Amino acid sequence: MLTMLTGCSRTGFYAPLGATVGGAVGSVGGPVASGGGALLGWSVGKGAALVEENKDLVQTVDALSRGDVSAIVSAQMKGQQSTIEKATDTIWTALKVAALCILGVLSIPLFITRSNSKKIKKICDKNDKATGNI
Image 1 (cartoon, rainbow, N blue to C red):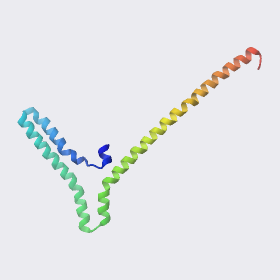
Image 2: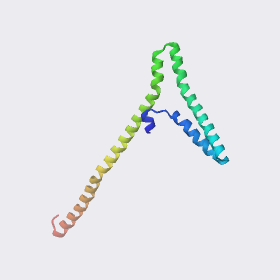
Image 3: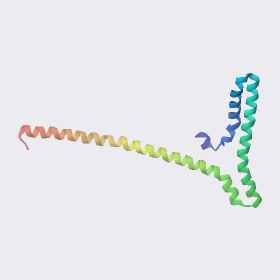
Image 4: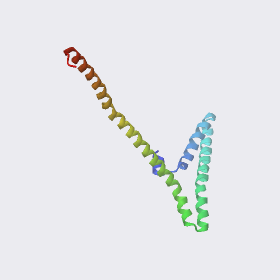
């Protein structure tokens, strides 16, 4: 969640994740295989990150070659808009849950009062019959 809110890209985690997985898989073959697996995993992760980053770059270069300023701005803001929308949805969800919790807590005294009033009415009715005050 913090990564999404700070605007960091997940592509930065590809290389370390690839190195970790490659090292773990290579550890079956010993230290040399583990080092080779980590290197191979890092290079695959770095390549995947470059491919992911280049997808956005292709759209920007295309817009630059056409001189379309609105396309350039929309290409740059596309990632930020989705992050802002996700953060806004999360905030609204938290507010809805808080409102439901508050309503639940505030409704407890209503039910207690209703129950007590029924008990008091029964006691009063019993006393009225015993004393003859109907």
